[in-house]
Image 1: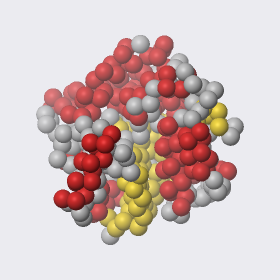
Image 2 (image 1 turned 120 degrees about the horizontal axis):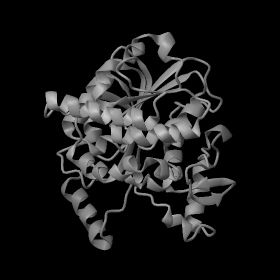
Image 3 (image 1 turned 180 degrees about the vertical axis):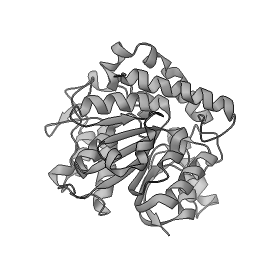
Image 4 (image 1 turned 90 degrees about the horizontal axis):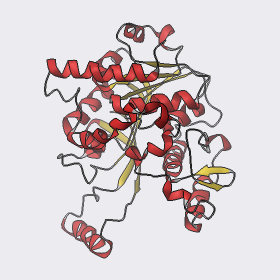
Length: 337
C-alpha cells in the first residue's frame, strides 16, 4: 500500500502533466498568491518523516500561527485571551466545544481543561456561527450527509466537523496538492479509526457509486479534479480563508459549480480579498450575486499601521459609505436562490 507521501506527491506530477497539456487553465494551476505561499513549503515534502512528527509547528504556512508564540509564555495566557475564549464557549453544547488532539506537536494555553491557541479560537468561532445558524446539532445526525470543503488548510475544521456531524457523514476536501499533503497526514494521525481516500485515477470512478464512496469518512481530491464530483450533491459546502487567496476566475468557477450541486447551505468565512492578494477580487460580492444570504456576521480587523491605519479605515467609510471595509472577515451562510 502506498504511503500518503507517495500518493500526494503523485498528484504533483499529475498536475504538471495536465498543465503541460492545458497551460493557463485557472482550474489546474496555483494563483499567484498561492504560488508565493506554497513555494517555500518544499522542505516539508523533502524531509517529510522528520517534519511530520511535529506537523503542527509547520502549519503557520496556512494561518500564520507559530508555536514559539506560545512556548515562551505557555503558563501565563493573557487574561483578555482567556476571557474571549470563555465567552466564545459560554452556552455552547459540550459536544460543540472543540478539543484539538494533542498530537504532532500541538501547542497552546491550558484553559478550562483544553489546549487553546489562536487557531482553536478561529475554528471555534466558525462552529459557534454554524450552531447559531441552526446548521449544527450537538448530538450529531443519523442520516447520510455529504460535506464539501474547498481549501481545508491543514485539516483542523474537517477533523472537528466530522466528529460533530457523526459517523454517517462523508467529508470531501478539494484542495491544491500542497495543502492535501498536510491535511492528509493530519487527518490520518488524528483519526486512526476512520477511512481516508486520496484521489487515485485508477479508482476514481467509485465517486459515482454511492455505496462505495460512502464507506469513506474523508475523501481528498486535487483541485484540478473538481469535475469528477459533478455527480454528487452536498448538504454543506465550506470555504474558509481560501477564496480570498484565489483569482476571481477561480472563485467564480467554484461558485458556479456549487450552485448546481448544493442542496443545503454554503458557509464562507472570507475577506473580500486578502491584503497581499493582488487580484481584482470581491469574494463576498460574488457569493451574494449567486446565492441568498440567510445569515451574516462581520469579524472586524483593525487596519495595520496603528492610528494611520484607523484613519485610513475611517476615510474609506467616509468616501465609500455603502461598502464594507474589504479586509474584515465576513461569515456568510447562503442558500440557493
